Length: 121
Image 1 (cartoon, helix red, strand yellow):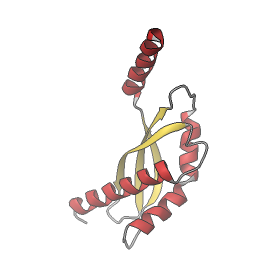
Image 2 (cartoon, rainbow, N blue to C red):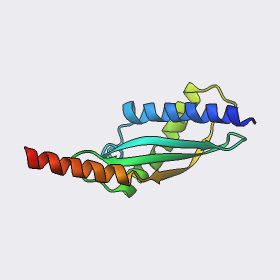
Image 3 (cartoon, one colour):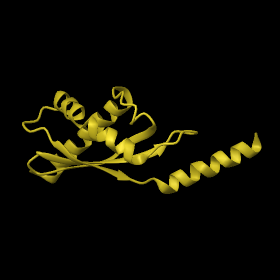
Image 4 (cartoon, rainbow, N blue to C red):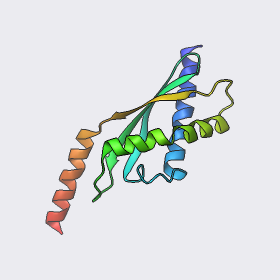
């Protein structure tokens, strides 16, 4: 399959998964943090996909990234179903990995901003 076609499919999968995470998923493990899709890699035969997420804390909340990843693994079947409903593909990719990409620099910046804000108020 051409790389252009795979890129378009990856973009659409990312869009559908993002919409489901923000609007449809009610798993309390996932709701403890802000989770966003940072990338999708689909195999050429469209049977498998690697999903990459960034996980950031909600201001004032504490969370365990392993617990959030566990929640993401629990909803893999639902996300695959949503992708199959939205995309007309012969094979719907099965998520084999839910990988965490750190937003450490952004996290540090947000903590500094919160600290500065608390000193002003």
